[in-house]
Amino acid sequence: MGCTITSKAGMPPQKQAQQRLLIRGGKVVNDDLSVVADVYVEDGVVQQVGPNLNPEPSTGLIVLDATNKLVIPGGIDTHTHMEFPFMGSRSKDDFYTGTKAAIAGGTTMIIDFAIPQKGCSLIEAFDTWKSWADPKVCCDYSLHVAVTWWSNKVKEEMENLVRNKGVNSFKMFMAYKDVYMVNDEELYAAFSCCKELGAVAQVHAENGELIAQGAKKMLAMGITGPEGHELCRPEEVEAEATQRAITIANAVNCPLYVVHVMSKSSARVISHARREACFHLA
Image 1 (spheres, rainbow, N blue to C red):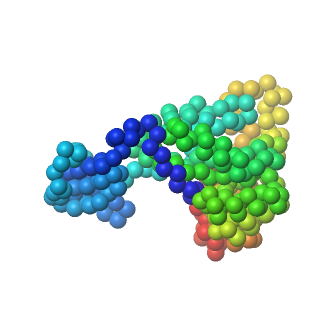
Image 2 (image 1 turned 135 degrees about the vertical axis):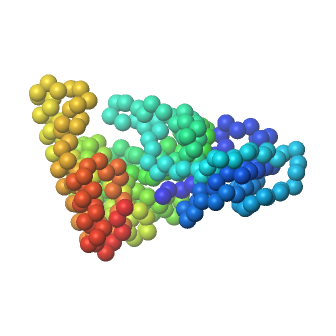
Image 3 (image 1 turned 45 degrees about the vertical axis):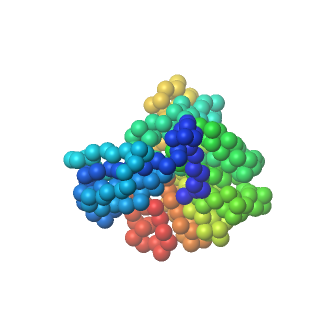
């Protein structure tokens, strides 16, 4: 999901050339099986996996003993928000500190979100996030793009992003009233466009209207701490929005990815839809 934008920021050019690595004797974990084997990597690309590999020795070959250890592929975190400006705040991690920590934990790629304000250009948002990331990232990254409003211009820019920028996933918000939230008509249009383009439609499924009313109630009661966040978001607001998003996506036969499902109620809605629906649901 998203275009792959590879960067070697922070790595001296002389260390990029002709890197050769042999990981010897570890248990290699793949999706289908785990087996004790050697792994030979050249210039960041796995060249061979098998027992007792003997690549040509040279001064550039690094050998790591992985006996009694697991050798697993690098992880891909498909949902991150690095240095994200949001409602007067900003994400603590930028693209450097966040991806540095990711690599330390075995994640070698992230997929972040370029999120335009209402009425603003999707392509400009994409370029802005890319300008933040390119000088800093320590691992591979790509970008989802959010659709926060709808017009013919948005549709044209979605097509441009897919055809020319390598983007293949778009996120719509049903929450955050007056900030990012789109209505059902806009959701229908965005899902239809994703279907036409062959892109993945993602949705943050919460009933933004009910949350806004719940937030007003909490503030009126003097509840201003973090507990108010949960109190104004009962399970029903997610389950209702999830069902609504699925219904709209089904109407246009658009594959749908419901992000960060937080409640049993929503999980049940999704589980039921997966059993009953003819379209793909993640």
